[in-house]
Image (tube, rainbow, N blue to C red; front, side):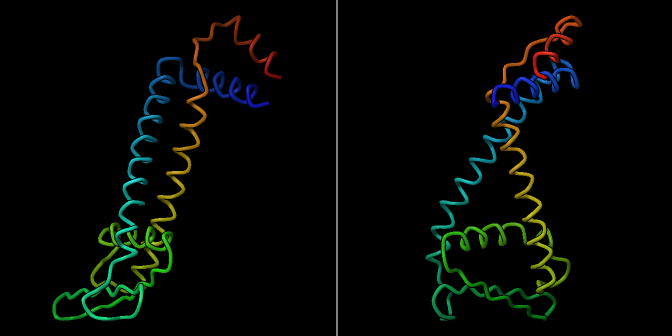
Amino acid sequence: MFHKLIDAYEYWIVAWLGYEKAVRVEEFMNSASTFVLGMLAMALISSFFIIRLHSVEDFGKSKVKLVRVDHGEKSQLVLHIHNIWSAFETLLFLSFSPFCTIKRFTERDARRTRRFLISIELLVAIILIVASVSIFSVLEPISEMESSMVMLKIM
């Protein structure tokens, strides 16, 4: 069953893009997945640091207080870190929050950042799935005669 799925994928991508573009797309997806896996590994290693992070003031165990001052106004947000996954989310949250903050950091900006992180996670999942499938596929040019034979064989 898996081989039929891979054969269908190989035929579909070559028929849709052509052989040369299909090879380039697969190379790009493999490179992107390598980059993404490296980023995830670095973030996981950094999250071990964040889980042990304590702020200057004592806010209790595993609490990090973010304070941002803009034009004399102060906005605060307390993050609770319970396990390695929450530390990983906190690292991503702190990394991408400047892109989603308009004036002052508020709860609305936190929700906007979380939605952005969910969309990034979906994109990463799609990249990894396509790269995993492209690892097992071997693309070959398709001639007119072969295309009808391959379709009959797949079905």
